[in-house]
Image 1 (tube, rainbow, N blue to C red):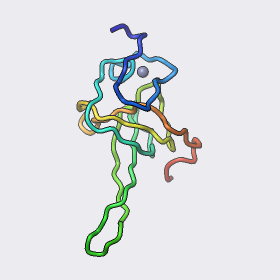
Image 2: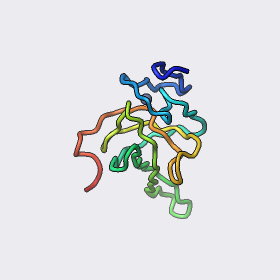
Image 3: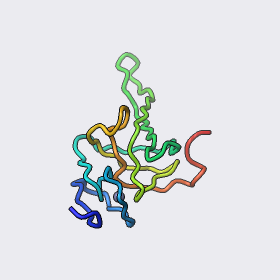
Image 4: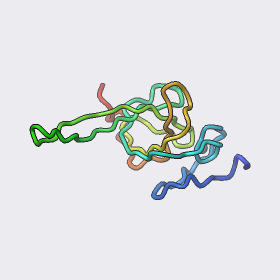
Length: 122
Ligand SMILES: [Zn+2]
């Protein structure tokens, strides 16, 4: 597959990025396959090169108290240069093969652009 073409990642509701890139680990322009979980979360850190930290807040039902408690998880995801997700962005991430020790997700697209420095807690 040529590097200029955009692949179909097989995830409904996610638009391919307008830019292209030469990243071999890009789900759109590289050879990275997406399979498994598709999640949505907020980018809280984009400091690492090519990787973002995505936080997911969710509610967990505690049977004993019949109430929900807030829980959160942090997921490291590969951030291809054509998408370039920044802190505060709401992104869709898809599960892939392990890219590094802690990265096995990749950013598929940005749902909502955050307000630049407004995102994340600092
Ligand atoms: Zn790309």
